[in-house]
Image (cartoon, rainbow, N blue to C red; front, top):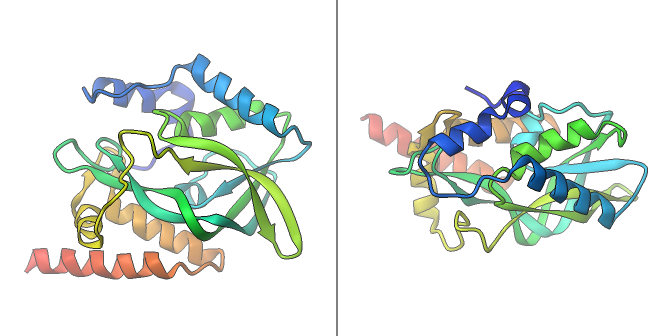
Length: 221
């Protein structure tokens, strides 16, 4: 299944984690609200932009006013977040994308109506559920325009951060891990397709996808 708007509105995502038995703190609604408030107070502006680099590209679930392509410098897209529930299990955890230090990343800019706070809260319930990301204002280049947008940077101090992972291990987990929200291989494929539909080609993801498909093919022989 794919994460839905209803999952975030009803708190189902939080319930899944709480019932999984995994020893991890799930942020309360008050903590999520405080994080959102703190982020917005850091850079008050009329237009609120969000920078998407993974599943928010092909499954945003929140309502937005405008969608554009932009580039962030100083961070790159990487499978650096363990998931032992959504797209994995404790015995075979999956990997999710995060923005990690160095390089650059092309992704999608969403403009959210600032008066519709509930839409931003949905994003916080999704991205900040266990505090594995840090919401941060970053400069996003779109042609000759530079915009400030909120991006969810990987929290390097979080226990789910996959700091040093070989290419072989990354491919292995992406090819085999799956959970209640689907498989990591599907997550990778949908991200690649979502990027290409927006005119973005990520060579690293394409390479990973080829290697994941090759490993899955060998496993079936």
